[in-house]
Image (cartoon, rainbow, N blue to C red; front, side, top):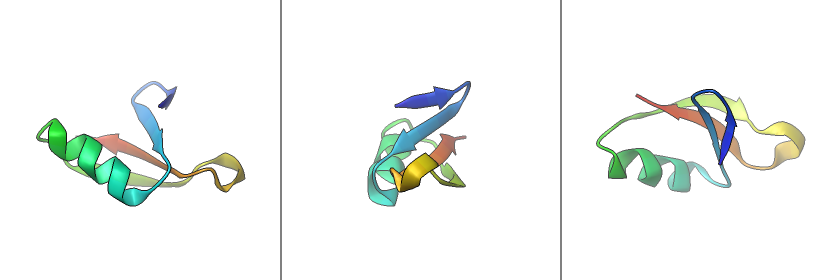
Length: 44
């Protein structure tokens, strides 16, 4: 789920990592999502 330009949210680190891996990219962790609803990340 996109939070803002280039920033995505996933419920777990594993989901975020899998999402980026599927695009041959590496996840960069941006911290916890608001209200502890998952993690924020970018793929690069």
